[in-house]
Length: 470
Image 1 (cartoon, rainbow, N blue to C red):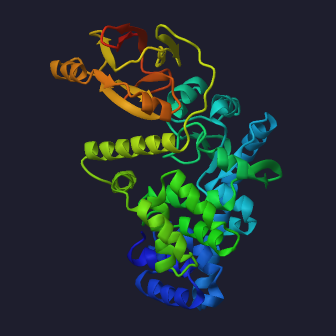
Image 2 (image 1 turned 120 degrees about the vertical axis):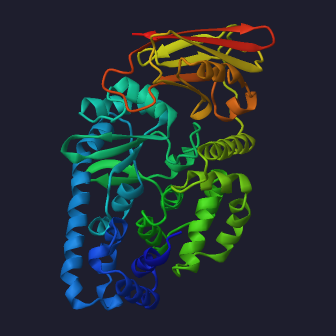
Image 3 (image 1 turned 60 degrees about the horizontal axis):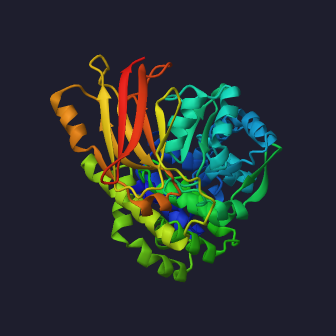
């Protein structure tokens, strides 16, 4: 939660008048305006809007008004730059749904003068995400790591809930195939989509989440950031809680279904206990047991900006949380029976210049995938191979021609195939991604990749990757 002077400024912006006045007096006594951090500057327009309530010194008002104009101008630039892309996505029938800050401004237009917007977040359906990437590419929007449309979609967005794109006019768009990072299974956002409301974005028809879903996004997303570097989540939450239209049963139900009670309960408890907002006590009581689940508590500690250390401990905590969430999701919502294509042998498909490999699993009950990577001597060490089940990473192999690097790949070659995990992820394949370790120049990492797969005795899926210079 925000600490020290940051906490005082949050209270100045969103607490009831008397509490806010005391907080402002304490903040302004300890922090000269010239020393305000960027996170605090973003909060000041909302403080300035309460100038009379807070009894702000008259000599500060012109400066606060200047900050308000600066924030408004920066946000308008981002919004206007994104407008043509939203129009393009809407025109091709992709039904974009605004998320986070852009959705807040669509729901509460008056916030445009007080809410700084770094980028515009847009949600599209996972099965049309590659089409949306192509539309962005045609409009001149690029991801810094994956400059081409195919690799941005097949290597970038396919592994994550969202991918950022920079466009003409200084615009930034986060293209989402899933609304929340922890919930990346097809169907996770179906209820959000069903509740979404029609909206306008500079006269472009689009949609925005219902208030309950928007509150969940605000609370969960902000919890993964440094609490003193991102404060304006509190403005969004206070606006949503204060308008009196929330269905708290939906908030609780979705928090539990998505297994995000840890951040939601913690944030709501802070807003109620420290900031004095009207969060019903039964809501906090309903969220508390799930909010104390040690697996998810450790996961969110690892997700935070200053998370668990060392790095391997952090990765393990996140993986355990993802697996637990997938298993609980499977128990709550078993996959529907669909017509299956019968496979007697694994089928290998390659895309993105061969650097994404999908291995469609056969119907045989497999116990293990054994990954053998044969890198020719002239292949540079600067590569990784990620093995995924959906967006869930199962294993990571690092490049290197030394004896230790080769031994390490051999020792980590066997990956258990858990049928329940694949069912929970709604996945029927292993996905392998051969990537550079660092940001790569345009043109890729200079690798040619060949892949074969076969079922061996002992219910083992034997996969061989051959890497050579392109």
